[in-house]
Length: 108
Image 1: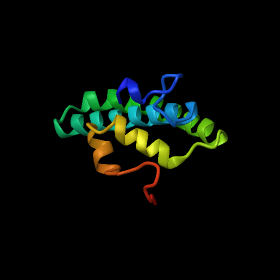
Image 2: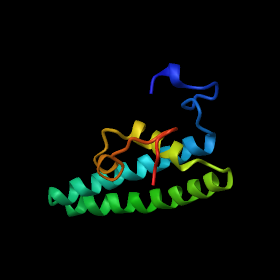
Image 3: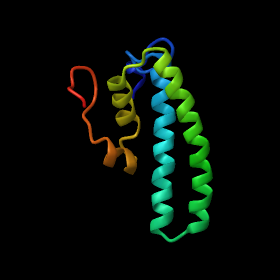
């Protein structure tokens, strides 16, 4: 996202702090999942083991961010829109969230 789309707090316009944080943590977890896939596909089980440890930490952080977002009334469609915008190059995001997501888009 370009700077013109940012609000005064540096978040993409229209996202609350908890939505922005959840999207970031979720995108990071998806990035780790993508690296796990690559490690397995290349047969590098040592790297897979390292990425699995990273994933365990990311999962804990994701749970905490989701809890904060839920407590603050985060909008899932806004979080999904931010995830797909931030993680559009990410293999796991592409496969699991082909979109489009965002305001005015009917989501499941």
